[in-house]
Each structure stands twice: as structure tokens, then as C-alpha cells.
Image 1 (cartoon, rainbow, N blue to C red):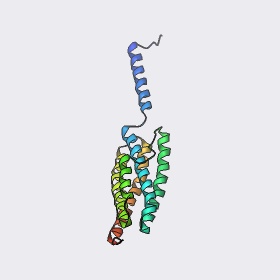
Image 2: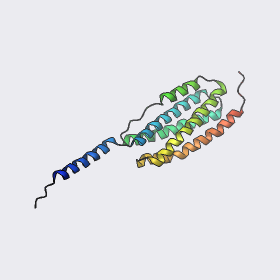
Image 3: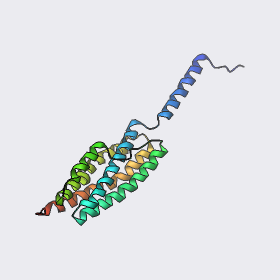
Image 4: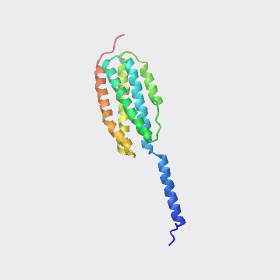
Length: 179
């Protein structure tokens, strides 16, 4: 008995093989690629602004918060780089242009104005925008490891937001220096 494949069967097999090869070559779904890129830029922005705050902030509690952001976002960034490397994805090595511009604006501020703007911009606003990114990825990611990464770090982001909001209230209640 001859087990020769029909031309139609051969075509179906070849098409299936090409589809699977293409899917493998494409790697991550767009939602996962986008998350990795944005999470990396956000992390770089947090670290960069935190380092700036370590030199410019007047309030010791703001400097403590900034140090915490530098430490924690640096650690998460390392984990993100490891994940991206395993997925053969290159990540940006710096914040986005918009994030750099926002940092440049607060870099020119002095006295307690810097403290207030840093807390509002990086502690509250940036974290508020990062949380939905992590939530969406935790729910909709197609890659189980990317999904697990987002889920794992979401509680810390929520805690960062609460800490920033609490500290912002405290700093906003202090009168600005009269220099």
C-alpha cells in the first residue's frame, strides 16, 4: 500500500508549517510588546526623576520616597530586562521623550515647589497612568510570563500611589519657604 500524500494534503501541511513558523518568528503579541516597552520607559522615568529628587528635594520625607522609588524601580527594571531578554525583546534604555521633557520642567524648580511637583508628577500622576497599563496586561496579556510580571508588580504600584498621595498631602500643607 502506497502512502503518498495528495497535493491538497501537502499544501495544507505546508501552509500549517508556514503559519506556525511565522507565529514563532513574531514572538509576543502586540499588547505584550507594548507593555514591555512602556513599563521599561516608565521605570527609567521613575529612577531618573527619583535621582533628581535626591539632589533637589528639600523635604527629607520626599528624599526618602525618591530613594525608595529609585531602589524599587531599579530592581523591577532588572526583572523586566531579564523577562524581555527571555522573550528576545529589546527594551528602551531611557524614559520617553515626553517623560524627559516633564523631568526637565521640574528640574528647573527650586524650594518646596520642586517637592510638590515631583510628588504630583512622578508620585501621583505617573503612577496613576501606570496602574491601568499593568491592570490591562494582567487581564489581557497573551504571554503567561508577561501576565505574571504585571500581576506581581501591580500591588506595589498601588502602594506607591497611596504613599505618594499621603506624602503629597503632608507636603502641600507645609507653607512654601519665603526666600
